[in-house]
Length: 522
Image (cartoon, rainbow, N blue to C red; front, side, top):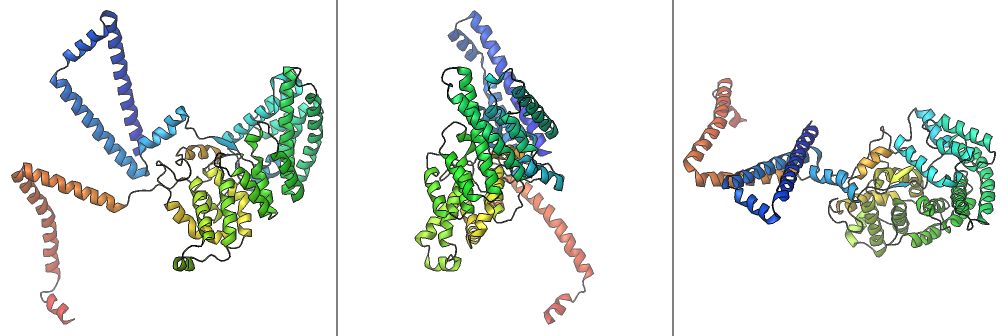
């Protein structure tokens, strides 16, 4: 109710400002047609009277007071400034502050995993917004202008946009009827129709052979024709995509050595698609599964660079490796007595860094909040990234004895040292408040989105501020109008004393006369 009322007030104020600006512009244009600009200014200034300045000052004071009251009410109810929230959520995206959504490097397979979840729980694991982003990705990866006129590719171009899974699968089969070697149709069947990981791998292996043949075919002459050049780039994207998904199948089927090799080979590739896929995060995860911590550290040394974008995988894996050194010996009591060792200081700094980057992750790792199937896209530093990280990495934290215990006793103190979200951060940019809106679009409605905890002012700050303001006002009134203020205070005190005296009189009539003697004897 309050939020609706405040929004209505803001809309009215904005319309009033717009109308005033339009009137001023129209008046100025009309004057400029007749006189020079200095004449306009002179006429305008001479026409102003003292009443205008008084009215302007009074109006400004009234609007300022109204905004202050509405801001206070909104802050009391929602714990955040309405102006700041409105600016960050609706104005900052226009000037480049929009939260960027990334493709989840560890995304699941729709047919073999998401569909099974839907059948068991009767809950949609993916939102339409998330699936629509995936459709846009697939169109960018697998379609080019040189495919116009080819019936199988035109069918697949429409198939990616279909909302119903059955319609997408049907279109893929139709494309295969037109062209039995349609690689993108096989990709769709592997992603959305195959019921098991074994079936997924089988279809993708078949698609890999066709993709390699197409790539070699266009590689020979891609520099001679612009259309062939576009096909060659598309074929390279398809080839890399298939290899990555096969490597993910190997990871799920426990073929860890093969998965590591494929991810290592892919991480050496340099085409633009690699900036979207973030294969190094797949490599880190599978190396953690094989407990090859030295290899994980070498990967982090390459990608955990100050000039490269960070992620929860980078920050929390770095913290995990440093916690691993102290996990079996860390004791809070000993630390308070003897102080921190150098290894413990390094580990705590890594935890502080990770918590500052994404403060939502610890509650999922410590199982203080239940997580769900991760979405196909994530928002870095948001709840969607925290869900995806915990879904795949919780087992790695549990495998290191004592790691979660160290996180449990340190993460809250780390969070308390993070500056207020709208201030300057220590190691990263201020936490973007628009993450809540983006996460709400990416995550299903039955999941309660984790938001950055608001640092509300304590009660006694409000109490002392009100008390000091009241005292200052009372002192001013006594100075200006001592007689009136004295009478007013006397009336208020009488209003308070009269009901108290009435209650005391009623109490005396109910109690025996010698009640004080009885109490003194007791």
